[in-house]
Image (cartoon, rainbow, N blue to C red; front, side):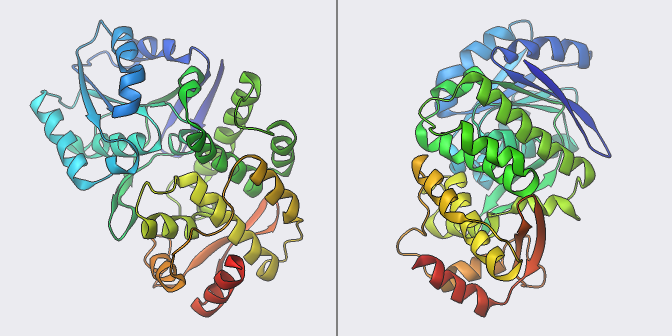
Length: 358
């Protein structure tokens, strides 16, 4: 098992990664919450069926409440958020209570936002069960969606710990593996060219990932993310680089309807479009043919989904929370590992979308 520490200007917390890491949970709770009253576990229907009883058994010495929410982005609605707040109140949670987010990125986002706003903020711990959550569980961004955009209602709120038991990943379907691994690729592209090449060399299929390789890339991805968050906790500067590929990806997700395409699969398309823009406007010199070939080998879709209007995508991008005064901003690469933010006109974006789709 690997233990690392995320350090931000306001808070530091541990990350435990490896098979069997969940055994650290009751130990950590006893040592950090002497006045603990109750624990509420928020999980989704699929994860709850697989792992909830095991976690409840592990915490048999504590007063446990549970809340089951829909799977995926359907959990990140105001109605579900409101139900979670009501459940916490009805269960008698107070300011000395603790929330556990057992699930993927959507559950972590929802449960973290519930914790951030319940009685003006109570502690929570991330218990990720997907590869994608290696990105979302670290860094303190918690949120729910709005029909006009993804993660529009939320906060910056750091967990007390992240306990990442890789045995929970064994049940992941292929599309969820692809979704999570996309963010791992992103970390290599924006920060570490040697890590990017390591990934291409070692991960040639997502059908079976060796435990050592899995722990290695999760730990390195978290290390990259935590270093950026430590420098810029509230996204006033370099943290925006973590949005590489996300400008178009969020527009695709919103336009298709959340959950129709996984977040990471949309990010892959967004990254490829950003690389096209990087070649034209940021001076990137990269042979993307090798990247396309590798992505196809891993089972990714690399083109825009059918039936999407370019104009509608641009409108979505203009309303993205990363835009300023309606100006669309993209994270582009000057080189692999050297990102920079560019503002592009709608005319350029439209023309490049046409070329990308062809």
